[in-house]
Image (cartoon, rainbow, N blue to C red; front, side, top):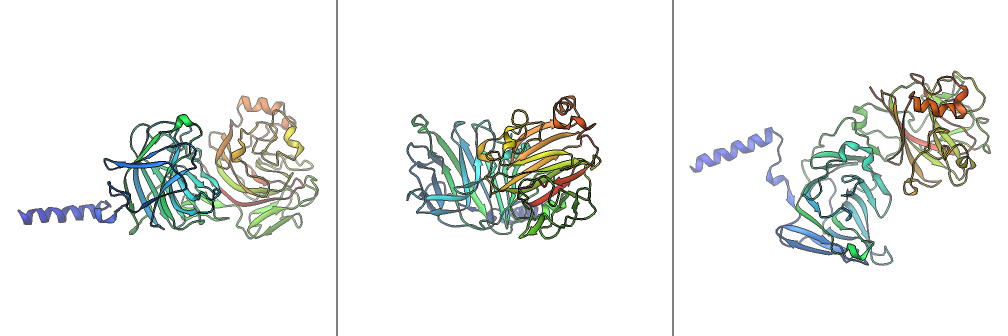
Length: 457
């Protein structure tokens, strides 16, 4: 009988290896189910208790965010655990590669670093990535709608976080959620958050964690959907995953390769500067296309996913245009559908047009972008714009991970808007089968980088 059991164990081990399953020895439990050994509380005074192999966090009033933190730091790992939030108002999160500043928050201490979002509200951003105490949202889950329905309220949900080098991925109940490439933090502690509360009647809200385990060796990247958008924070960089899924850089960070002046056969001799990884249009006191003029891609595109970073100067005006044909031979900026780039606070164009349709991230002179101030970076800071044109002519604009508008190119509703806009003088405006991507010279200094595109089929 002993020989029979040993043989069965050997067969199970071989089967696990063949099928790629984890053996028990691959994982380390971070919570022993009974005590807080290996953990400590930081930054706030919310309560944590243990019962039936579960850690429970309990909200208390008049305290900042509270964290139960591992005493050990971790670099590359796969973290798994289960979490249950009792109500839909107690937002929470799981910190990783995070740190503590004892002098922060007026001496109460501040935790900062990557956070896996736990969001039971109707927003449905559980699995999104946030930078606690520092950069705010890195990957709002609006960037991956397919992951927004994975969280289930009222039951334990499985959390998975994979950190390998600069690649960070998340899952909710085994459904892929967020993917970023970032180099700000390579190691740090893991923590369970009890969020501060805004009202006394919210005291006593509970969140529960269990089965917390980590794997730190023999790590292999887990598969992710090919069409997922990767928020790559390394300037002018494409990860191996992005390259394999069809993304290409339109700006290499060093040269003007792939770009020429609008209505020209070469890149402008003046008015544009390439330096320190940025492509910058220089100021000419707000005079449209009188210095270097617009620049366009040599290639034309039809259906695509375009992402770009831009940095405005105070009062600046510019734009990213698409489906530019250069057939109009007009004076000034070339004609095309325009993702507006504007300092809404200082530039007068924000108050012109109709109902705000000339403000930042709008479809210029046609559709207003629906924005909130939290997701707008001020002049001098980098913003991320994104334009998706699907093969069926559905179009979406994003600003810093938030979808701000959508429309159907060529629809009757679209044509009705064109008919009451400045574009009504051009036949079939914006309806070309393909066109160039354009960066506008509107006479103000604006910088660009990390311009990447993927053709859609």
